[in-house]
Length: 376
Image (tube, rainbow, N blue to C red):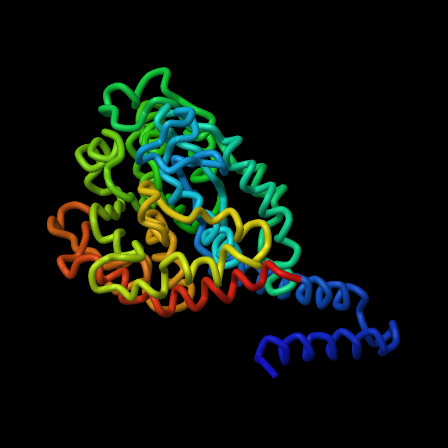
């Protein structure tokens, strides 16, 4: 029996003894105090357990669920895109029990360079078909309705654009305003923002706080942010690095490719299309079936998931492998160096893509197991 269980039993016994004694010997006020202490103990224990999860916002250049791989695409521009965000989202949804998800942002993507949160909502409609099965294994899996309520629209036409065109006056979005609200919550835990697409909406949130608050207010806001960037997909990434040396930023410009099934040094048979078909896509319900066969290039069929390291970094931390506040430690999401100690900016470790791919056996084993949870 755990120490928590023993403590609860002792409290119950004490309450019971007080109830059994006569009113002349036992104060009703004391009984009320004991009851309040017991309830407060249970509530505080629950909060402590919840607080162990990391707060997360995902920004993704999320395409339609019927996306067409961009290389050689002759279809509508709004459907021609990189399907690897769908691949990453399937895996991410299977880990929402271990993360405290506080936002999903649709940033600009596709050949049309548009952001459509409806694309994400369509994905969540499919998640809604399996989430009850997932909660049979862990009640912490969020409902689709909750995830719908925290899905926000980012700005169109930001991909590849310089910061001067996408950050500043009149550039607020539903997403940038929501990010501010999340960070401002009375919750002392930092907010991790995993940028699969561009970081324009995150940068805009910081720009607005800087423009509307004093130096102390800006510092407080920045201190609660942790940003993991997959590449520099628009000019706002460099703007963040140039203007906020104290901002905690991890940027992976190459090592994230360790997720690619055919990356040098990785075991391709644990992530090629036959493995994906057997363990994820086929006979694993409607969400598994949404996992695309390829990424950008339809001729290279298998796992790409270039964005996945951003949250696997937090997943392995939940497993106790690494401290997310120390990016120089090994993790499922890579290892990073801090070349300038005057800045809180972290870059790919020289060990290369293998700092991600080395964890493939563990990550894929768990991915397959959780995919099985989607079934009755």
